[in-house]
Image (tube, rainbow, N blue to C red):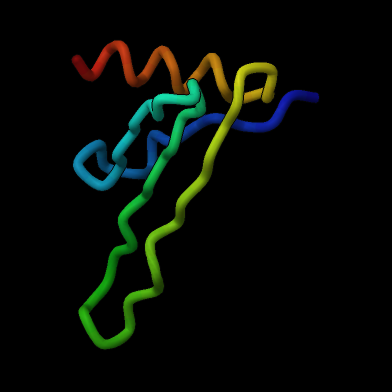
Length: 64
């Protein structure tokens, strides 16, 4: 079963998607909560061939 790519529970303004010069895609999800109890942002990177690469590439193109 492919991994879930459902990000519907995360507001779009907390998700940042960037494509690096080497072709990899970096996804940053800003942590929520008050300043004193907030966890660090979640940061993921995907390269061509990774199961979620095409999903995030589409999201990046739709952002523009």
